[in-house]
Length: 148
Image (cartoon, rainbow, N blue to C red; front, side, top):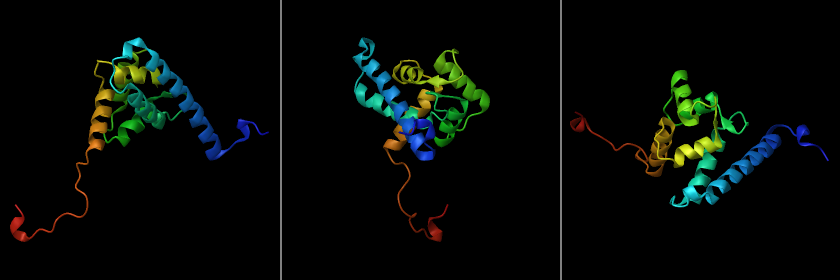
């Protein structure tokens, strides 16, 4: 039986992502059982959504979003940030205890009352994705008289 070290490419990556999702799922379970969050509306759905978003940007596969992961996240969300802004965002979420955002910090930030820049960006992005702002299809035909 080959060990996981012999796996290459996609299989190894898939296995790694699966292990990662399992860890995130265990942390989600802690939040579901935590009395502090029992009044949170749709907690299970929120945690599932947070898990998926977090896993997408954990680029170093260490179970945390580092500076580069956060940079990619912000670029993908269409709000690129400077190195300094990214560092400030990480400090804001971790309380300055780490150079990377772990999943517990991420969930605490998203479910907590404090508003962090990252939380605002993610909430805004979710709202933007929820309702299509851009019109579908080709623009309507216009004649010369309709131009300003």
